[in-house]
Image (cartoon, rainbow, N blue to C red; front, side, top):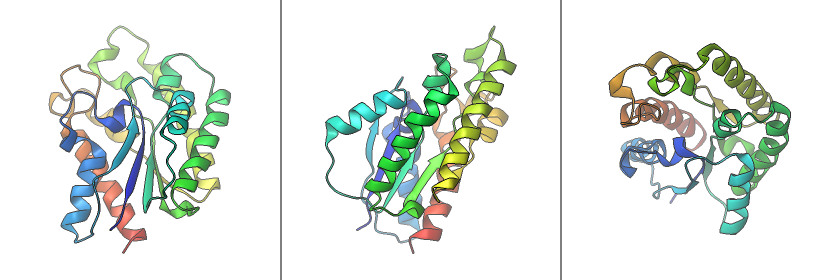
Length: 199
């Protein structure tokens, strides 16, 4: 049986949506439809976490096993709190190396999702949406560069969050986090990528 570890923050745990609607559970559901035997995802994620908080929790969990594949989505709270991209680069690199270790040392079993643009949502009303977009782009550029340099997979979901950020059906009740419908978009792409590697 294949195993899946999902590392992240509110976007991984699925703030304000049912567990079955978050993207890790939807991804597993799609893989099972393709007759892949996959266990429920192990999720280490909490709303509000920055890179260093995720790293601290990973240490606390003290996971010893390796997984068939790992997803990583982290950084929006670094940006939200005004932390520098340089700081993010250092901490993200450590998390990516940790994710590769969890994937049994196989970089091609690590799937990184880009940081969503929360500035496109109703929650950002009255804030400088352009500045948020520019900062998210800078974070994602660093994330993509490091991810690809380490031969891991990079999935850009930022465009989808910008496209759907103002559509009620793609948003949870708080007007900030995605709904299950938006997560389904991510899960569809992620499941395809995973299937290409694990067949």
